[in-house]
Length: 371
Image (cartoon, rainbow, N blue to C red; front, side, top):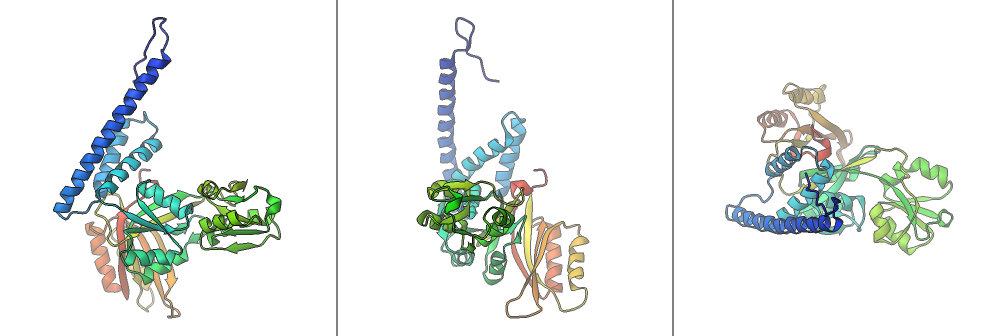
């Protein structure tokens, strides 16, 4: 508990309390600098031993210890956010990290990337989702972050199709609450002649637009950030974009929160060349093709059910150029290095016409079992 600094009149001395806060802040800063130094030293030791810089299990243990020691005295969400920034900054100091996202600046993909990596990564805006996969596969960036599914509109098909085309692995996931804002240069609805956005936000705001802007055409562009960028240049254009886009492109709000359904959330996945080690609270993603026989899907699912493996998602996508053929995306709880997951995947390899391990990675905080 904080000490009460009393004056001669038995009243709290505001100046002395502020002085004590300044002392605490200076101590925190000194310890942060010290922690950063030790993180760099760990990075050098790992380089000598050729060990991975990222240890998800170690990070989860830190968060669990802090949560336990906190005893709910400090707000838990804020505590996680503060230490996430500290831990990420220290980890990235060991090796500069380049992260590609669907640009331009201020898209929801950009927000998800910053939420995952903090402020210190080297962010690269890329024009299309497929180009992000290409940049990662060719090693021109360390990671990419792409939207995979939305709680209202479902899967992002360009991301699913890119997993079929490019050899990358899922390294992490992030859930981002989505709030859509209508913005333009003037802030006046009567100036709007066209509404621009990515196809997903336009679909998620369909009823609001129909009710409040009847007859105004809506056009799809590559990203919400591009829509905001175009609205900043043309007074007749309005964009549906993130709150960050308002400040980034100096636009005015016409209406906030225009999505048709509350609780709108998008799941983003981090893609890279190699999945991380076990964290103890992981997911595994697969891409499988089924044999052309009755009950093939049931047979594959039975392999997982008999081992009590919990599926969190399954979705099919058509194979390009092969009518009637599909590949299935499967997400399950557990890591490929878990014995039961390894055994199940070996059986699936034997029983499926196509099998690809897309990666094993830590569950996002929002999707963890105890979150």
